[in-house]
Image (cartoon, rainbow, N blue to C red):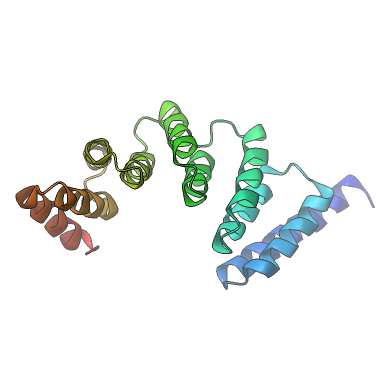
Length: 178
């Protein structure tokens, strides 16, 4: 089989994996991604997709390894850094997760999702004022990011700042999350 034939086969497995992922068959998706990786073990797109499928199965440490492989070839991909951070946080490794969000924000300081993810992680650590600041940064970038408004409102409630919380939660509901 030629190199181009290997690439076509790998691409087919990747596409099949993506279809299975969309249908919620995460084990099947992982099997297809593994077959694609047999030909191209360092493919960043397939490693990233496999990481997302592993997350759905709560296999966070394996997912993190996949993101690391993808980042070897795409070190400035904020989406990969964000997802690695999410799974580090899911695995209870919150400080490492914050570092991932910081890297994403070094690459793109206007990444509202990274600010929101960093805020969620700060809140998990009990660093509530820092979390509010992150949510505010996210909102400054994207006024329509309902999750930032919602999370800000929840944290403000914990801080007994009820008037501000009510406004933030009302905004989240207005946008579509409440």
